[in-house]
Amino acid sequence: MSEFNYKSNRLHVENVAINAIQQSIPTPFYVYSATMIENNFLSLQSRLSDLNHLICFAVKANSNQAVLRTLAALGSGADVVSLGELKRALHAGIHAQKIVFSGVGKTAKEIEYAIEQGIFQFNVESVAELHNINAVALKCNKKAHIAIRINPDVAVDTHAKITTGSAENKFGISYQHALDTFVLADSLPGITVQGIHVHIGSQITDVTPFRAAFKRVADLYKQLETLGININVLDLGGGLGICYDPENDKLPNMNEYRQIIEDELSQFNCKYIVEPGRSLTADTGCLVSTVIYDKLGSDRNFLIINAAMNDFARPSLYDAYHRISPVIESNKPRKKYDIVGPVCESGDTFAVARTLPELESGDLVVIRDCGAYGAVMSGTYNTRPLIAEVMVKGDQFAVIRERQSLDDLINLDQIPNWLISST
Ligand code: LLP
Image (cartoon, rainbow, N blue to C red; front, side, top):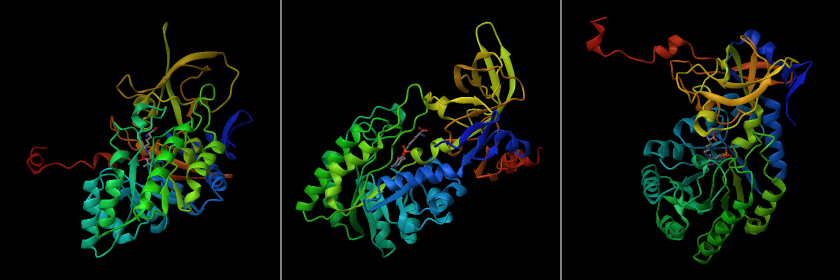
């Protein structure tokens, strides 16, 4: 159930009116509903309750400490892809034994830190990485527990930039080479082989490709068993989509997803890991922004808002559709708008020809479903400071990341000696 609802014509997050938040926190900012994050987690947990499972939230989707702590309190683990994400997860109180480390380019420094912390598993993506993990583990006098990520070569109907399980993608070890790689891994003294990992893409709304991918995992499991290599962890990745556009998108069928796991994998009596990112947080957040100008033309009407592509990249990067709504509902005549930010690029466009009630300078709008891959992908292009984040719980709200100050942003730069004397 959404916690973003109009009450007396004003959009609320849980019991807090967005325009009330905006009185103390200048726009643009992200705002998240803690209750929705909790509900999304608990609902997935109950779907998997009859499996020995661990939900490892994909920290890349939203790495704010308040979000991670909300999930940690419910028992969530974490899927991390960098030293920074690993430190964030640990700092938020997620136990190392609930952390899996994915990604194609883990460095020796990252591997060493993760081994020293005692993480649950590395998801290994190449033979070169396997050798590196082995070498670092031996140096630390420890054994690294690993799963090997297989690339099942399964096509998924999603944006080309977010498929990961096809042969042309850089991820995982090709299905054809997987067996040999497991045999190699099993022979290395610094490595304990424990799992098979697969992740086929993101924003998947038709769950049928999971069946093909999981069948390959099952085949591999059986082949490994005959070789005496025992697998006790199956990491099924993330990828479940959400409904961004109620007129065109459908939600993934969770009963079917659960059934596919049941049919293809539950016979193995393993620990089952899932790595959801988007499906836990995307619909729990929106971006609040103020109209700077309306610019009415014969061809197009533009609404220029004070959020831009640096604050929220998905529309410019993936042509992603996001609902946009006014914070105050009105009966004003409706107009078609292109909704754009102030950055000097035509790609700084959030929506084209969107019908909204007439809006003017000072009005607030929200871009919906930005709780995943929103703030984490923000930057400072055009010297726009990193955006603020707010969390709501019931009738309370709190800033969970201050907007960066311009001084802080500018002071990140350093002046080389040869310029100091000349200024
Ligand atoms: N596990 C692995 C190994 C991944 O690479 C990813 C996402 C996930 C889990 C989480 O997937 P999710 O459940 O969120 O679909 N920035 C893009 C999405 C990139 C996803 C990358 N990998 C976007 O805004 O659509």
